[in-house]
Image (cartoon, rainbow, N blue to C red; front, side, top):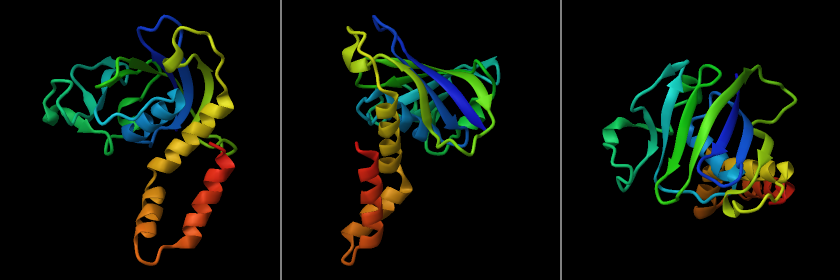
Length: 193
């Protein structure tokens, strides 16, 4: 299934949000990559998703993510691994919510399930379908470009994918797989980052 998620920056003077379509079999790590790419924010070593509601029910102390420096003052045993926790496990109904917090930055994002949709074979997911504002420029109403956001999401997915890791591993070996490297380079060139 496809989740339509509305992701809203909290505590900003102007509205800043993204509405994305994302497969529910993505992990929370994948969702973090989509968030970072669509909002054009820096990757952080420590971040958590705090589940507010799941399957229509209020949740208490459900944390998913990574906290290397104990910035969130939560026991590591209480934080579920974001690479092994799937969206469908927690985002099961409309209005299910989570808060995405980054340790070293001063922003939080509220994530809300707007709809759960059937996949469309003509659409490449994840996809940003609506956006407003930029976190780096909260004092202006500068318009955002959906095409640019989606290119960033595709690039972020490529750079965080196992396929990219495979290619990078091959390039570090004595006899790299040049064919695969050229294919990835061609794909990156088409994205025009």
